[in-house]
Amino acid sequence: MSLSMMGGFLLAVVVGAMVPGATTALVVRRSALHGPAAAVPVIAGVELGLFAWAFATAVGTAALVAVSEAAFLGLKIAGACVLVYLGVQAWRAARKDVVDELPQTAASRGRWRDAGAGLLTNLANPKVAVFTFAFYPQFVAAGPGIVHRTVLLALVQVVVDGSWFLLVAMTVGRIRGLFSRAKVRRVLERVTGTVLVALGLGVLAENG
Image 1 (tube, rainbow, N blue to C red):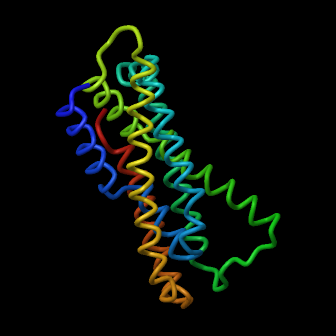
Image 2 (cartoon, rainbow, N blue to C red):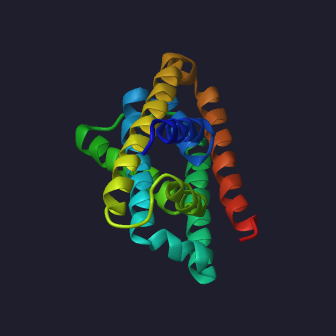
């Protein structure tokens, strides 16, 4: 890949990372309520999902999703269900007045749960699938070594995307004290829940 093409790739992934979406809402919510460190599992799950779609593009799985109406419809329904579920969970959390203070074992299970939420949000999002399928072929030529080249570019995107989300988490974490108030926490949960539900319904509403 030429330097100009690599520059174009980096610019595209930086801009893509900065566009708000369901993953941004998850990172902001987690870091605001529990601090930047608590957002790390979410970010790890998000980036794992991103890498999985890039790899799927290389082996042709994303192509099937893009051209198969049945597969695409199934993914849209799965994505909508995941987003709506996460949104409902946020609304349910808004009814609680106490911030979670769990023992170590429960906190560990929470980290796995947060990572899973980030992973599913990306894996069940048809926009990510179709975008990845359309994006990577512009920078990776078909032929021998395509998987290797795509994996390398995917790792670059994961680093850029993850760095942006870490910056978001740290920025939100600096004003975390504001969210120690129960009323503010409830508002945050409701806003996050509304955004996630709206995104989920938007996935279903879009024409394939």
